[in-house]
Length: 130
Image (cartoon, rainbow, N blue to C red; front, side, top):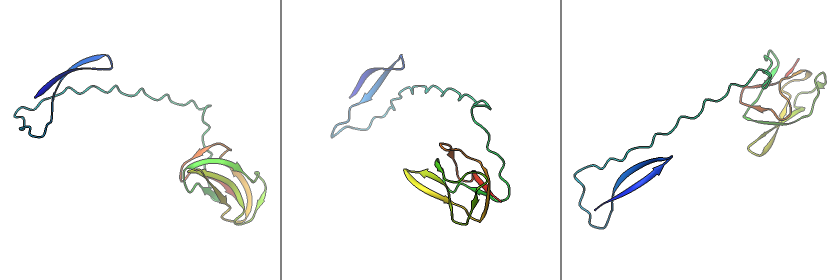
């Protein structure tokens, strides 16, 4: 048995026919079609201005890259400081876990490419040691 309904979606009224399913319902020979509501396109994202999002400095030789996506929660070493291999340089929070990012080599921290609170993706430069 077909039942008729009026459905209001985003201010547009649609008439819909639905077949009531029971224990012994013979298959319908005509396919009931229901109009699909048009999904409005998402508004275009505004382009961030150059001053709103600073561009990452180009990473050169000695740059250490982010191993995973996350948020920089702490920076432990200042630019110009000497670091030894395996010294903790910064903390990267990913999935509610704090990950220590350590120096891969000894040297001087010549550049920090991130700030506390920055979001990073895998492969983004974090800092440079020379």
